Image 1: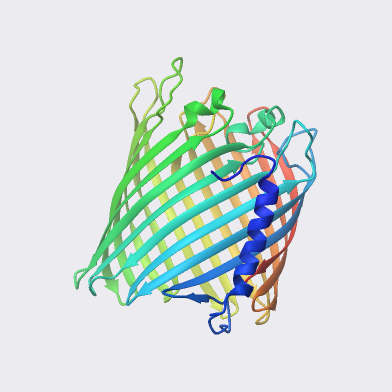
Image 2: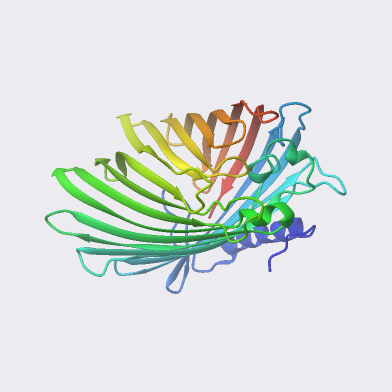
Length: 411
């Protein structure tokens, strides 16, 4: 098992050094591309190691309304991708790590973390009409103190971040003909919390989903779509005094998918979702849901992306579920081949359905970022983020300012 104790810092540092050495010890380094990371030829595999290093300052690491705590945070993100291509079929194996060290640590109170994700996926093209995909991943992750299960004042009373393991498995099959395209998909997710089991045990979750989407062409680059999705949410360790949160969701939506460029595809769809709880003491819900992913390129050097959703989500602590409405706009401008900037804004409204105090949160975020590609293999960036949460529940509102400077390294 990978370390999660005090020696995680040394392990993450050694892993980062190993990723760097991978690049400089390979004798079969592929010819350097004009853009993006270079790869190492290793027999049938093309291996791409990368390393991200970031220094971050936050004036409110626990996301508190009052008596905030500030800290410098140092982050390392080693990653390795191994790709195998067999004719039109592509197989990939990935490792992604993230280790964070906080200045604000004490002997019995620490915030350091070390996340690890291992994944594999396949893209298979058996014929011109069929496409099959599959993926599997296993991750050891964390929730920062003051978020998720420890939002609000709870974050001040625990000694370390909440940790959990998550497994994801899924796949899809797509068939295309002159009439249109039909996609069938399935997915399974299991999340198991690892510490503070006296209150995290009841939040272990298993989610199973199946769905299908039919695309009907109505123009050369535009499809009409009809999408159906079924999800089953199961909490295996319920609290005896409370009704279980197990539920089932059925969603039917219709919309459009259109191509701006081969790499820019927009989607807009809306429909109806029915969420039914297994326990009759919890109130079922049904209503309008929608999803938007809109790409625009008014000029070659400008890209604007608008993402939005309205959908139910599983709750963390309060209510039966969260009805979340979110809209995000991101504008990226390329000043030259090496310099780019981005400006992003997000607004969310979160309603905790059937919560005791009818909790509602308004969440705002603004992020500004500037990138400078010093070399093809070295990108530097500076970023600032402002977060504001306004909640009608006690001790859950906050503001936070975060400054980041970092570098992304590759071969």
